[in-house]
Length: 63
Image (tube, rainbow, N blue to C red; front, top):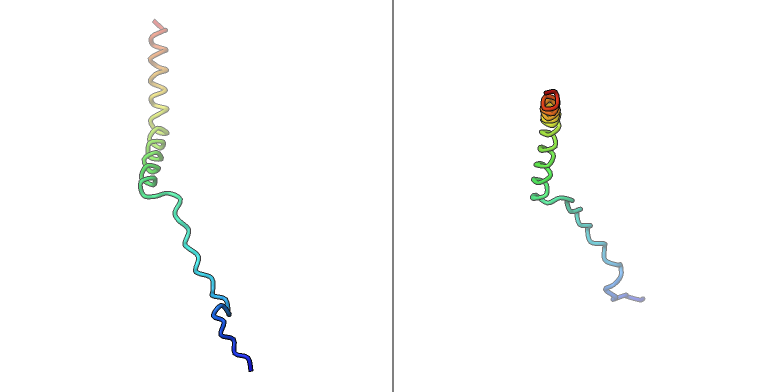
């Protein structure tokens, strides 16, 4: 009778896969939040500022 003392068989199981790393770290998340907040604020305030500049130009050239 043959007894196999080879420790390499059966092959070792695969190590568990590492969980995926987040794409953004905490600092980048905060920065992205500020950029989104600024863009939302400009979405509301931008047309008002643009209208004010246009009214000022019309008033300046109207005499």
